[in-house]
Amino acid sequence: MKYARDSRPSLSNEQTAKLLFEALPWIKNLTGKTVVIKYGGSAMVDERLRADVMGDILLLKIIGVKLVLVHGGGAAINEALSHYDLPVMFKDGQRVTTPEIMDIAREVLGGKVNQELVASLNQHGNVAVGVSGGDAGTIMAEQLDPGLGRVGKITRINADYLESLMENEYIPVVATVAQGEDGGFYNINADVAAGHIAAAVHAHKVMFLTDVDGLYEDFSDKDSLISNLTLEETEEMLAGGDVAKGMIPKLQSCITALSGGVYRAHIINGTTPHSLLLELLTNAGVGTVIHSTTEAYEHDWSPHPLGTFASRLSENIDGASEDVEPL
Ligand SMILES: Nc1ncnc2c1ncn2[C@@H]1O[C@H](COP(=O)(O)OP(=O)(O)O)[C@@H](O)[C@H]1O
Ligand SMILES: CC(=O)N[C@@H](CCC(=O)OP(=O)(O)O)C(=O)O
Image (tube, rainbow, N blue to C red; front, side, top):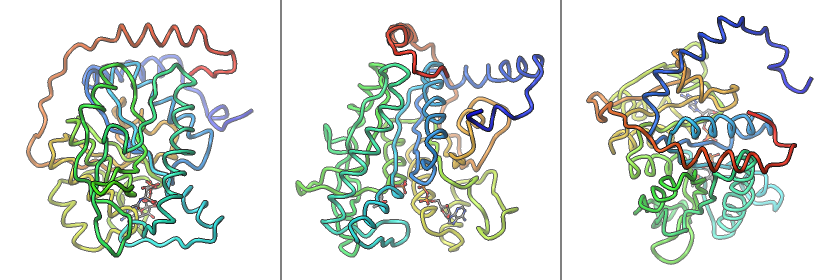
């Protein structure tokens, strides 16, 4: 037995049918809309879970959601730095990035992590395209703060490029190494990039997959998980100092996204199997949802040209090796 889910009590046929049917209104509402998924390095630790997250992303693609996957890889960068005996230093969730560390971040994010995620998605059909922030000027940046070295402040996002990939039924998988306005490279926190990208591509939702169940009012009290809060309350929490480390850029990015017109921002646990599907396609919300006080997005949805994608997918699956696991 390979995986814990095999030993879970199974649902009756009636319960299974009910659960599938429950997804219908959610699918109808999401089809044709854009969702930006930020997959954090902390949630990438288990290979099997990572493959499941990629499977969930593909399922969303199949039901007609337009997706951008923005990934982190902080843990993998830390590992590489310790290999080279280089220091791991953060200020308010942003890595202090010397030119030497920038080179390593570039290799880890744009190389190893990006390629592995693209390969994992493409096992199910060639749907993913790796995008480094510098490609077609997808993410342009300038220095954020001299004290942080090569950490970038985003100046521009090439939304047209990402949208053209999505229009052609691809999932852009974005490594957050930016092209500097000065010609060099900048390290961009992946949460920050996801917030900007979500706003730039007019996403319906931005989902942050991390290693905790959501935002805690008091991180030392596991009963204090916040299920939903407004933009204003999020700003208050940030100002109040109850949020630390990597949660700071996450909340800042939720604010960037919502202020830029994104309808909802979610923080969910990427280490909980299928948390994406639970949050997006079932009545059982998981994690924390942040919403603006005013309805920033119209709830219309239009038919989506599934045909092109579906036919390409079936072609790829027909031609795929037998090792590829079914979803
Ligand atoms: N109030 C809070 N609620 C939830 N997590 C918090 C809070 N304050 C700090 N954190 C920290 O933020 C971490 C998530 O950010 P990070 O480690 O950067 O993850 P990722 O790699 O997914 O971006 C959590 O593991 C937790 O340690
Ligand atoms: C400037 C900055 O902090 N860059 C991040 C980029 C990777 C990242 O954000 O990874 P996670 O999403 O896994 O935290 C870093 O160097 O760790």
